[in-house]
Length: 284
Ligand SMILES: C[S@@+](CC[C@H](N)C(=O)[O-])C[C@H]1O[C@@H](n2cnc3c(N)ncnc32)[C@H](O)[C@@H]1O
Image 1 (tube, protein in one colour):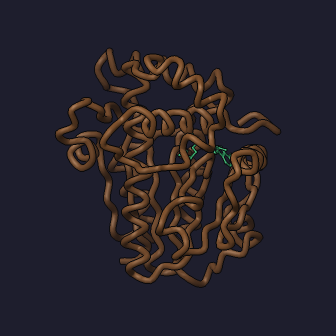
Image 2: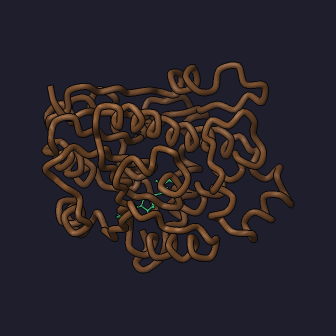
């Protein structure tokens, strides 16, 4: 992250979510605010030049973004069914969950993000006329400087009760130790707490075309000031979560994600590559 500047990758993924709403049917993620939150200029760019977003890199990335949000929201619905009443969105970016989902009023929502990204989001929300719901609290935190503990306490999260954490599109940009420290803090939450996050496998040992795509994408995010810093193997993720108090662990690779949310689409939209989605629950 660049000091004092909002996340450029957050902006980029928000634009791709808007492309999904404007151009793709059926919706993997139904997000009526996705277009509104990016603003009229960004919307116009999409409508003026839609082909620009149909590249072999943007389509699978878009598939990943919309399905990971869907994954988190399906897991949250089940968590609410188990009695969970608090949700923390870590690295929220321009995510619109709290402002549009019928699930949102059922939980207290805490949006935690890099201070400059959060300030920019609040400005975007005001400009778009999207009201802050009464059950939403903002908590600015830099994961590399503040402990998650301090941030959550400051925001008023009840650490004595189970919490559902949504942590999408963030682990890539953090050092391994920061990711593990976050597992560790969430793993100490009351039993039944849950986290949904995504991660990338290492590109080492992959085919040449995959290595080339990976190299290009990592160059692109580094140029945006947000280089990729960590990756994990599925075995590594299980071991590290297992050591920190997580029992039930669901880890979906691209094939599993495609089967679940992209089967039978006429437009061929689907995930590719090394990204996994994980849902992990605290407790044995
Ligand atoms: C790719 S965006 C994902 C945003 C959102 N979760 C989504 O899916 O649209 C990455 C997010 O991680 C946040 N982030 C990255 N590094 C961070 C840090 N050190 N502290 C706090 N937030 C950070 C950025 O501000 C940004 O909101």
